[in-house]
Length: 463
Image 1 (cartoon, helix red, strand yellow):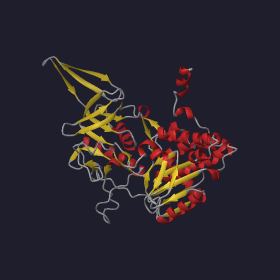
Image 2 (image 1 turned 120 degrees about the horizontal axis):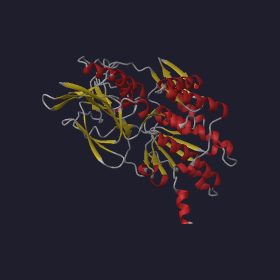
Image 3 (image 1 turned 90 degrees about the vertical axis):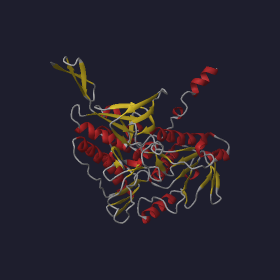
Image 4 (image 1 turned 30 degrees about the vertical axis):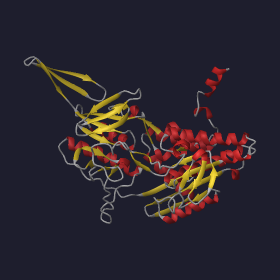
């Protein structure tokens, strides 16, 4: 005689048959799905799976060092104070209630043994086993061997970096307003951005807009005292849009007093002294590095196939080549772009949020199909265009073969990204934040203690 015993574990139900005849228990194991990364791809794949999976069909575990997903297109506005930083992130445990969330950093993948090694925040090492693996580790900043970059530069890929940059830039204004040293003042008010893609241009434009607005509250700092410098190694900015829009954007930025160095590389940042390839030299206390990204290096050291850029080789169905039980998408994957392969057989999907979100949703459906004995379908999506914010009420868009500039492009930018922002909760919070900023203006106060919270405590301990 056998009796059925069930035990709830939040994200699945375990069924254990207790059999008197054999005096042993036979366990009905669900398929173990392990998702590495909680960004666009990880979050949307897990959302799709938890919505469609049947009880006891599979277990889903999401591994990420951060307990939240960050909507990166909004980071420049968060850095400039147009959006509350907490509204740019989506708590994984809140939205993925039928999944396990493990806060840990992936250190290695051994697919031959179907194991992933992770390091927990307390330092202990753990090995995770899986039946199906989803590699959604995304990208990291691509640093070049430039002297002083690691010591003085900062990227803009996390909400922590956005918060730090906002406080850092405003603190520099406070310090410049207080110093009596003209050379130090000049250095404090010089801000350098390296990289002329979307990340760099949006960060530059939003932060310059914020400092210009903040000048109203400083009696001894005028907008023309603040120096913003853009350094780009290529001959143009915004390669994601047509060249005429890139030229127009550069002209608009120069009208705001921003210095733009094209076809120019950074040679050194030692001690905050910037040296460019054309011989230009100046001191800057703020160096923002947005000159490209690369696939998470964990995949290159794994036993999965990668291309020459360190990305996982993927099929159009979003499976790793030669390994149908491993799925991938987003920045870490070289996914064939079927909308362009006729013209270029080697074309892959660009690393942007538009593709990552759509790939993740498609991948979740494919995983369900395969679990139930079906065949996966190919991912196909034609790029609809690109939008960029250039500060308050300013933007540029290249959408559906239309060129949009200025205020209409800024509205389009905000509307598109609110639509793409995960969860209704976050959409409403962002819209309310914008409305309040419009009524009362954004806050331009530096919370300098955030960057060094123990300074006052340490000072008190010495007194």
